[in-house]
Length: 158
Image (cartoon, rainbow, N blue to C red):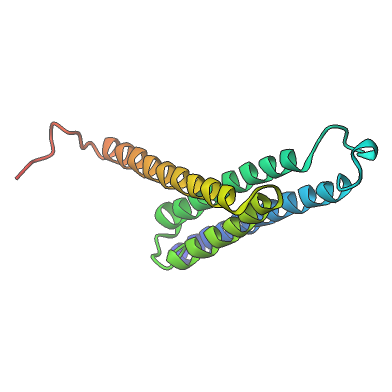
């Protein structure tokens, strides 16, 4: 029974953390959108001073990208370390997360840039995301190998 209780607690922690992270991503983007509506007035009556849509868009894109990475790492950590279930944060969850973040990012890019710039910047962010996930998995593997006592000198090359 204690194993079932721990699994349920881990699942509850996973779902609670995921919901909070998604809510934060959407709440901040919604807040930035509300600010964008405020500054859509003529420049002389802008209540936010010199803050322009391009500045809000850059902030929203950066925040959404960081939240995408955070949610991805959270899901991967919970799947591997606590839930140990292959169907948790599987390819479907990764596609949904990436699609939602992509829609937000593309929307902000299209608000301030041309199609070409949007595709270019989105492609760069895709490459950056891939590199970050690769570096994280490589660092995690190195940490796991060190924790289990495996080093390059004692791994057999049979």
